[in-house]
Image (cartoon, rainbow, N blue to C red):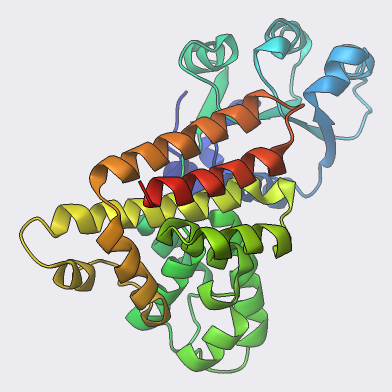
Length: 328
């Protein structure tokens, strides 16, 4: 059974089968589903595996095959899966009875054997986890902050703008907000101090200077900015968010000025970012934006398909490419 992610978010009990495949690039959403499964099955022991564990030894297979009626209840999480595990999963499911087995993958294209199997088999559930948009982030924030005072349009817009549409990032920020404002009204002034907003975020500064085409500052920032390879999907999401917002302005400014187009954006550009964003909008056209988005898309595919690649090197090349495109 194929479910929309929002359906399962609202009701995890929709997953009636004992095995479910979650796949997609929205790692934050996949992590949320893992938490929901754990909360629902507190009496079960959670065993975590990665695909390599199953491919290199028979421990998991033997445990399923030789399970005793007196064994404690267990749930199996198998992460980082792809088609290499397809035949093994078929064998495991032929032996499994009431064991709950959850698979977690990143991108599985429509030709994927594993994806097709889970989509067609009645005994399997599948939940695609595609990137969040402004509406889904707004819904997430509204639900998490339900009952808190001061959650108005200004607060919501600020949080959405600073999330870069990354569920992983917004969840981190919401944890801080819930703790800090537990016994006080949420206000934008304290919120700005609490959140790592664009002004204080080194990666955002690096992104802005590259998109402005400022080669000297970009090269200096590349030398001084601390980058973590595990956060590359988040960094790319930051860039994609800015490029897509610039694309919106290009489209809107066909019948109005750039300034008027920017003022119509929803959610609005945060006031501290408005000058830089306006300067960027003046030098980026649709051709440049599409070329840059192709670069970010290619990088996403590269880092997900090639585990041996130096992720920080190729990300730094992307930043320099953005600077070159801005000046082209």
